[in-house]
Image 1 (cartoon, helix red, strand yellow):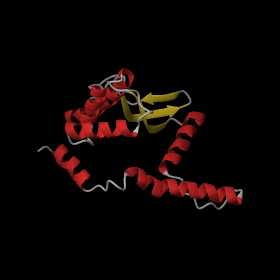
Image 2 (cartoon, rainbow, N blue to C red):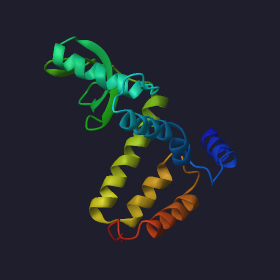
Image 3 (spheres, one colour):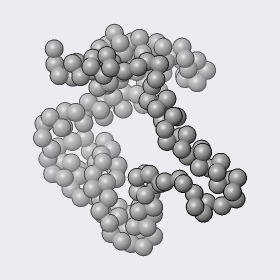
Length: 178
């Protein structure tokens, strides 16, 4: 059994199907944000608010400042590869360091990446491209393939079960898959 299989099985074995990641967010950050918003509305001011910004909020402010004031800050951005990672799909989106200023971003070339990391990235990009193709083509097969390739799904059989459950749970929201 490969490491991937053992890790996926470990995660499933130690997960509570009745308390998902969505539940964790709703009980954590979402509850904090909504509570703070109610407090601000009730007081009519954000002064002395107990709400603490998170890293994502700080990042957005830093990005806006870099664009507005041409600070030329180095930031991690998700951008089209277009050769920044030279031995990787040029059409893939990659998260790499960029210099950000008034004219947008300038990618910092990463050169070649090691085979292991390249393999992980190629697998993830394949999942994403297959999902898009499945949606556009209405293809059950391609969506099944995407889920099967996902690092979070331990087997093709489990991928099929997940896909069938998703189709049932999302009737009316998804296109018909053939």
